[in-house]
Figure (cartoon, rainbow, N blue to C red):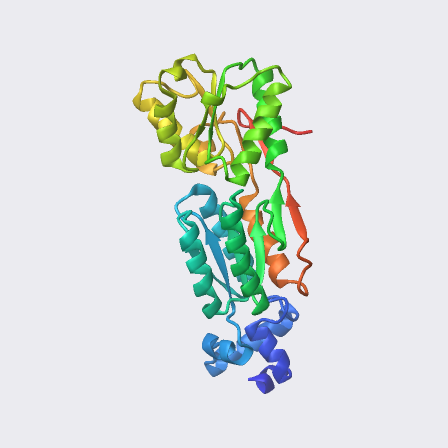
Length: 334
């Protein structure tokens, strides 16, 4: 095949199997010649042989909390697109936000010999849970699997982050300037770092306008559609006195809107519900929906660039992405 393409054997191998740059290895003309020769000879890549030869699969593993979550689905899409560019496949695993399942999955991943593991599960302030996770990740790292974290954490691995606190503060300020005064907040359990940062930023933005939220109106539920649905019942009759229910994820916002509708309360006509993450379908249904656009698909490119594109990155390496507050359907620009 290399002879037919007029290239060396190593060059043909890199063009077919992916070198450091994956499917972009070599010039477009060289890749075309090699692929034409492979098709003419009926050759196809044998992934099993690649693993035997290199000792590591041409795959990356991605851990998410809930595969049905809107944000997770978008992130999975981003990782898959980034992986395809590099000539690798993605194995998605879901932890169901169960710390024991999370550890069991990481133990199993050691035997699968992935090139990298991207951790996009909810990180917490539970020191025992985080130490157990870190020990598993250190074992993976010692065995040659790159580890990248998505989101803020205390773990000593390369990470892709976004400033949830600042974006939430800016959105809260815009709502306050529009005349809203009475707020409730729907959040994840208080030990989840991402939700905590969003809540703190939102409260800070309101405080800048002399608005406070009673602790009883900061409702902690699962960071999901069902959590948002349940949170409305937890608020009870107090919803009649509110101007805004600020959900700290779009998934929670969807659940809240659904339950409010069952109670005869329409958003935004009677009560404004806001979100965080910017799920495109919500913008289609509610054109003036206020939320924060988190570049979820860009997480994939950033995470795989840390994991696969360079020599092993420093554990302190960070790629910080920008979140954009959206007020009544329009981005808030500085």
